[in-house]
Image 1 (spheres, rainbow, N blue to C red):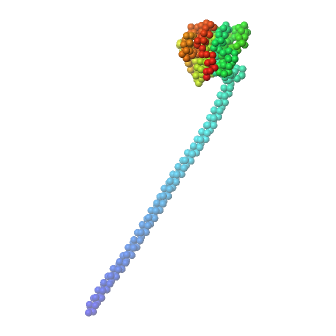
Image 2: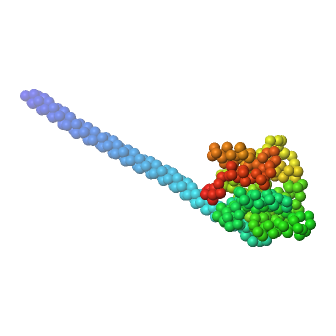
Image 3: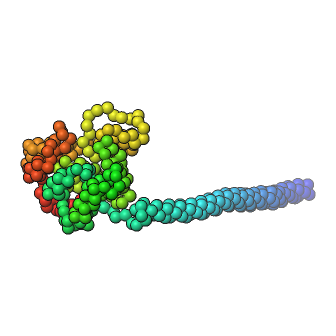
Amino acid sequence: MKGRVTTKASVKWILFLCVFCFAIGTLFSNRLWDSSAEPNGQQLLSQRRHEQVLQVINDDSTTNKNLSHNNDAMDEVLKTHEAIQSLDKSVAMLQMQLAASRSSQEMSLDSSAAVSTLSRDGSAKQKVFMVIGINTAFSSRKRRDSIRETWMPQGKKLMQLERDKGIIVRFMIGQSATSNSILDRAIDSEDAQHKDFLRLEHVEGYHELSAKTKNFFSTAVAKWDAEFYVKVDDDVHVNLGMLASTLARHRSKPRVYIGCMKSGPVLSQRPILHKYANEDVSLGAWFIGLEVELIDDRNMCCGTPPDCEWKALAGNVCIASFDWSCSGICKSVEKIKFVHEKCGEGDESVWSDLF
């Protein structure tokens, strides 16, 4: 019996010890598991914190880089702005210098213009539209009278033409070879009556016509500030209104020479202002090679009736009419009145034309 009890008791204790050991082992295992898991969670949290710190550092670095980049860009903007300001100052200085230069040039031009409008005696030159010089001689009194009776206004009308239209018409003549001769006194008397002469510092002579023409232009330029200077002979019929309206169309051109250009070789190689036997050839030659626009206007060289008459009937009134065979109107004293009746534009034309 004792043996059985001892055996049973030992079996119970064995079972109890087994259960106890299992419980202790389970408890110990859980504690070990908890203790091993706890450090892993801390490591994960630590790792996350480390990553956050790295991110912050990263962000700070990026921000610093951006700030650095922005600072560089701002520096460039400031430099550009300073450069623009400097350029603006330079431009402003240049503009001031240019304005000063222009002002100086304008003052210089004004002073030179003021000088150019003074005549030889120092008085102010009269500004006019055109000056017409009618070439005449001591022996041509009848020719002059025939012109006065046809296309050239007289007395108050001549002064009114000058005042209202700016058209100066004068007979141009020089001096005789003998001082104060009867020829000179006759011209003085005629001028006192009509007041339509321009006296030249020139000794009259048929072979001196080129020199006389040059003298006329220099005298006219010295006396009047005109847009156009015209030379015509005392045996040619002229329509003043047509002449004025034709010249007015060329006002905008700085240098222009208008007339009937005869055929022939162009004289390009010549002495300056060489005087040929014919004054018209000389005048044309003086302008060749210069910066002058040459205009061949055939209305300035119409024939006498019926040529100019037909043109007038067709509405194409001639500026000047003459006979080519005579280089003027043949027997002009007797014929110019007839030409004026057939080819004249009408006495009121010059007053009504706008130019």
